[in-house]
Each structure stands twice: as structure tokens, then as C-alpha cells.
Length: 441
Image (tube, rainbow, N blue to C red):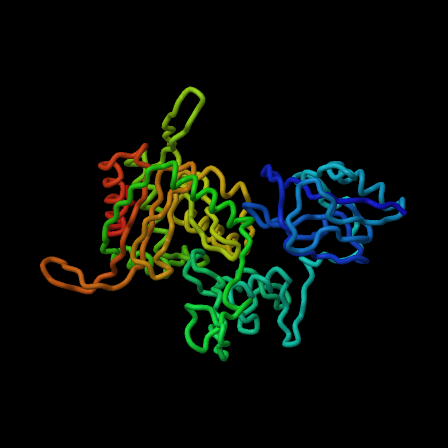
């Protein structure tokens, strides 16, 4: 028998540590090369680790919830000599005792699996619903009852699209899980004679139930560091404008009814995205970046748009971006937003999807907020916030009428963008929301 050790690999983003989120195997399980053995969370992504070895899980060396340094052993396998050789040949980047690099290790089918991968196994519940484990997890995250979903997959299987369509969520920005307060906020007990001054009569502090400590790590740690860096290095200025978005709402309604968009989810965010891209072309400095170099600072103006979308996900705040969004048609942009939404909801946004953004949109309207002063994403010079779209009284041709009104707010790095530029940019975005026909040039 041969014992092989798997060490925590670098998943291609230069990380130094990661948290073990969940083990997909247990001691005694038989695994094949590329079977998913655990999930880890880095500062940017939730990543599934495939096994570089074939054999039997011997010992799990890192507990769920533990933070482990790259190169540290996390699990051992045992196999006979006949099994060990193919594994070593198939996965040269995962040598025993060395720091593995995830990208490129393992094979796409060099070994025959002795068991079906858990991630691909269909599971039939007691009420007859057929769905793979990742689809069941997605349904739980979205609050979807699988028994209420109409399946479209082979043999009556519920697919990912079935779950997402059933969820009918407005966008990726909505929090999927909102913690609730406990039923009991305070407890009253007879106060002893020596009760501390400042406590109400008959009241005692309730240990363990009144506070909760949350470790700052993973996405939260990365987000807090980036926001502090941005807030204290770039002088922020925010401007905003109220907008009559009634024609945007009419366009969204027409697109939803169009056969060309039958398989695409359409929301006002699509028009907002097109408006930001259009306005950035007219005011290129909002798409620039302040860069400090050894010889001094410089402003880099980018003649392309990698459009960032600030997304509240089950893992925390992420800002994936759509690469070369300026080259996309309305329909292709809608599809890209759909893909971004689905990937973020599943917690599968990759590090590459979060790098290289040039300007960001944050949709605070889905939280019911009218406006805000967003913090600029590091490496960018501007971020635009869209508030809730609600019917309000609006003066049209001298008459007060109910119209769909929203607020567009933009925060900018004043080192890069002057007041007239930021004002012109926000006004351009607002003008497109007021009259989407401006997009037809």
C-alpha cells in the first residue's frame, strides 16, 4: 500500500491561505482522479478541489472552518501500487510533500472512476423530485421549493435554469439570506442586591445570547481592506440626479414580451448598463484609473469597458465584471448579465471575473434605497448607483402625472475626474434612462 498526501494548492490567484468550507468525502471513501473532495473559500472565490490521486481517503487533516496555509497537508490517501502509478503520471503537479498548483493538475479522464462523483449524482427525494446536489443547494439558497418547480431536464430532472426561473428574483443584488433576530431579545430575572449600576430594575445581561462574534476572513476581509484603501486614497465626490425612467420601464416591458428575449431575463439594470457604457464613451475619464509608479503618478485612460456589477451574494460582496462590454449588443449584454447573476448566486464567481474592471454599477434600488454614496472599486475612478424605481408625482408639460422615477448617483475619484466631467457623465446616464432611443446611434 502507498500513502499519498494532498497539500492545499494555489488556485491560481496567488493566495497564501484559504478556509476549508466543506468536505465532500470522509475517511474510508474511495475516490478517483478529479473527484471533488472539498470546497475552499479564498479572498475571492469559492473553489472546488478535485483529487489528484485515486485511492481511499485515509485521514482528513484540516477541519471544516479551519484556515489553512498553501502547502499545508489537508488529506491523505492510501492505494495499492497498481493504482498509485497512474495517479502520479496523470497529475504531475500534485506531488507528495510539495506545494500543489491547482490549475492544470489532474486529468480529464485518465482514470476510470470507481464511484459516481457526488456532484454529478442524481438524488430522488421522498416526494419524487429528481435533481443533482448542486441544484438542490441552489434551490435552498434561493428559497425555492423543488416540489413546486416544473422540471424540463431529461427524465423529469430539475435543471439549474428551472430553479432560477422559478425564483423570480429581481437581480443578483438581492440578499439571498437575511439573518433574523432570535425570538427572545431580552430576559428578565430578579436582580440581586448587588446588581451593577446602569441596569434596569429587574434586568440582568444575558450572556451568550446578546452578542455574536463573526471572524473577519475570506471575502469580508478582502472587501474591508479594499474599501479602506479606496476611501482613504481616492478623494471621493458624489453627484446625483432624479430621473423619469418611465420610457425605460416601457422598453423593459417590450423586451420581455419579445420572442428574441424569450430565454433571457430582462430588467432595468440592462438599460442602466447600456447607459453607463454609452456615457463612458462620451466622457472617457470616468473609465480611467489613477496609477502610482516609481517615476510618479499617471492617469491611464482605457478605451474599453469592463463593466463591474456590485453583487450581494451568499458569500458577501463581490464585483465581477463583464469583459469588453462595449462590444456587446443589447441581447448579448443581457445574456452576460444573466450569466453573471447565476454564477454569483451559486457562489462560483472566479477570480478572473473579478479582475480588470474599469467602472462599476451598484443597484441599491433592489434594497428599496432611493440613493447612496457608493465607494469606488479599487483600480477604478467611478462607480454609479441606481436607486429604486417607483411611481411618484412628476411634472410633465405643466401637469402633475404619476411617473416611474429613480435616482442616479455617481461617486468619482476627484484626482482623475473634474466636476464638469462627472456632472456631464451622470447627466448622460440619466438622459438615456429618460429616453432609451438615444442608444440607437
